[in-house]
Length: 397
Image 1 (cartoon, rainbow, N blue to C red):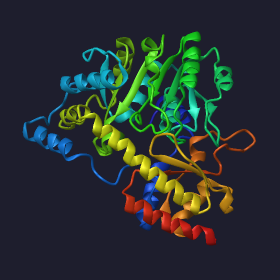
Image 2 (image 1 turned 135 degrees about the vertical axis):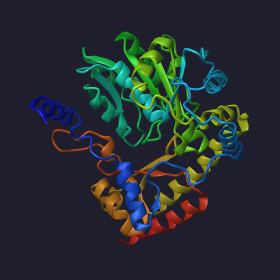
Image 3 (image 1 turned 45 degrees about the vertical axis):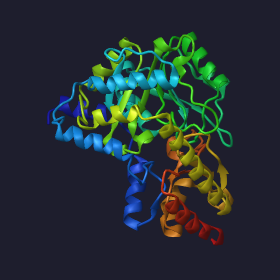
């Protein structure tokens, strides 16, 4: 390997320094190794509706097995546009303002790689989904965290404004918010919009839990005045239809932003999931009762798990949305959530995910999420009941 290549590899390695292995891989592997109940990674333990799965079988039989267009098949792009109008009143041109991606993770990644330049600053709500930081780092940019703090995880608007620098070009928004379960209020969304417009920032809005808002309706920031032209809205089929392994996501927004995203995406997967795309088009047109039933069923499971976690001795922060609940492990005598999660399978036969990996360590070594832990309640009721029963053992430690 020549000196030039060694130098190039070194520079790339430095850019990726600190990214490491995703916590979800570590904790899911731990669940497999120990036979513990996995309340860490956010995947349902039941498949989505049969009508959608049958539509995928039909697509395979009909020969939809080769490359789909890079932007996604027209029927799916049209279904996404109908969905956005039906639920949010957003008008879209499916030919130019909709792109299908390999899950929401790729949509966010391609958006940031297509829109962010080396040296830029990108605002993120902390705690943040770990891929945000990784992709911003891959783009040669810097993430700037605005922290949502327990117990209510509200947006500190003054801190958001103060976080903007002359190098800031984008905001990554996530509501309903993973991992805290916070759903931004209209006032908080208006504050984000005001900052974005004042500083001419692009917003990449991750809204994969849009149908899982329990406390108040989800409002896409693209619907606020002055935001449609500067927002890429991201969502996916995985969370809404309990088909996470299909990895069908999408992004919508003005054609120039969609083109920038596609400029990066074409060199990532280009296209994927050909027989799943027509099936998700079918899914997006399901009646309203499906979407409200999903929300109401998960609200019941949220309440079951949160009640059980409280009984086990945790401080519980009941989420307003998503399918994750957050607890503080300090009342049980633990001072480190990561250590707690690594020992929990042995202590109680359950796996969870520590918040601290979604936060930045401060210069003094502190971490706002040090004792916080995230639990997934997108599991069958009997699984949650068994997990709660196992966690009761922690009270005797």
